[in-house]
Image (cartoon, rainbow over all chains, first blue to last red; front, side):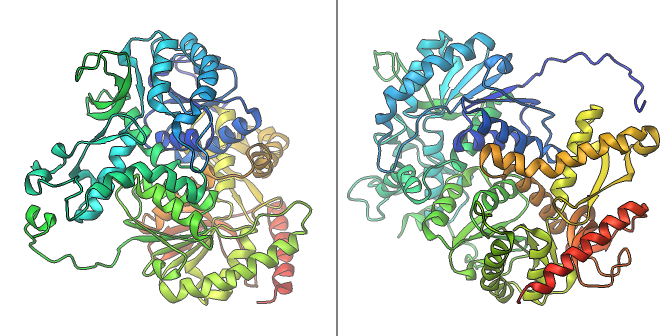
Amino acid sequence: KLITPVSRDGSEASRNKVTVVGVGQVGMACAVSILLRELTDEMALVDVLEDKLKGEMMDLLHGSLFLKTPKILADKDYAITANSRVVVVTAGARQQEGESRLNLVQRNVNIFKFIIPQIVKYSPNCTLIVVSNPVDILTYVTWKMSGFPKNRVIGSGCNLDSARFRYLMAEKLGLHPSSCHGWVLGEHGDSSVPVWSGVNVAGVGLQQLSPDIGTAQDKENWKDVHKMVVDSAYEVIKLKGYTNWAIGLSVAELTESIVKNLRRIHPVSTMVKGMYGIEDEVFLSLPCV
Amino acid sequence: MSLKNKLMHEVHADTPMKATSKVSIVGAGQVGMSCAISILQQHIADELALVDRVADKLRGEALDLLHGSLFLKSKISADTDFLVTEDSKICIICAGVRQAVGEVKRRQLQKNIAIYKEIIPQLVKHSPNAVLLIVTNPVDIMTYVAWKLSGFPKHRVIGTGTDLDTARFRFLLGAKLRINPISVHAYIIGEQGDESVAIWSSANVAGVNLESLDEKLANEQGDQIHKKVIESTHDVIRLKGYTSWAIGLSVASIVNAILKNIRSIHLVSINAKDEHNITNDVFLSLPCVLGITGVCGILRQRLKEKEETKLKNSVENLLKIQREIAL
């Protein structure tokens, strides 16, 4: 009685659908960050815990008035993820206090054996962002299980490590992180590599001003900056039990680049065979467009 | 010469500046952190301070946010000492205990009042001109408590009240009409919780009054929708253990209206004396115009008789509880 229909309400296909697999602390932080950045017109959430999943979906839906994502769905059945543009995979076990990410491998591979084929079935053309740890290995596993071309399987990798590095660098220099450029590459974890030669502010290389930077001889102990990056996750886990806000923001930034085709550069986990003399099929973070 | 000095030529010494739109959040639990991330991601405040009693958890949360600094535009600080809240424009209080299983509501209330007796004076000391935004439940009573303990004028003490209930109401109505909640205008006022009042007489879409269009919507179906709103909190708690995202978004929108002096209307819990024939100091939700000074105005609604009666019952109920509190 209220509305005169003008066009048939066909269910229009969503254009930028994003699916988040796993509604734990990390998954929901990614979901909320993506919603707050208004990146998608449809969001789907998947998990095995049905009550928790429904509760999270309802909590988001209740905030619909304040968001610009008209459709938010949740189900343990992957059918609701159909035709996603981007799928963020956060499912799996997480590090306990003091535990290394590598310890989680087998448990999470088993979970992925179930998840990945489901995602692929319903969204054969999506781009996968793997967040679960150990991210480099699981991104490799996802690539193998999905059969996707290597450009459509990325791991959140060192995007967060680099963000943390830039935050710490900014604190040291009294600047905003967005003006501090530094890249942490390689394994997202204990053996990540801070590329000192590239660390710069407005193109001025810090290594040129201070050739000892990053070494034990460096009086200002910049090496500690990288050490703090490596220790970051362990420290936050020790204090609050898990990390979520920073990784959520980091993943939202990656999602934005993909969905909007920005051609920004991010250090993400990708298949690096053929680069730097690497002859094996292995995933680790390099600056990617 | 330090690396920093080699890199940059200092033009003007970095003088510590007072924040111009600082927000403090007391309580770094799920609700507090959801408020924090909503405010930070929408770049609403230039500075955010977090306070909590549990030092480790607080530091962990603060670090987690700081690690995301690259993606944000606000200064973030945290401490167990309230000094960190200095010069806030708005202090959001999410602190408090949840109702324990089998606990009488009165016990929970007494515990929360005791907590506020510690918190409020500290906030007042460090931000004597701030607006206090209360989230702790039961929100109407806690807003009254905050007002009494702070001695602030009534335009600077508000509670999130039925703002979220109204958002949920608009969402459910919108889902039924297949219209975005933003275009569905309907209010829930009064005491937040089971006794809230849904105002059907003014519910409209583009000025078209819903009640006159479909009487059933305003009555049986309407009651069902209103009931669903009331049960919402319990439903979400039952499913995921607590609510966080929706209340965080609601709080962010209130904070935004105040800091940017938007003068938009929100359903917040305020001292309703002199409205709707209320003669006592009692806090409940009415449509308020929010701006930089806090509550700039209260919208006068013409209510139907049964809506007035329900409101009157709430007032009596709330007054009863207020009299029993030792402040």
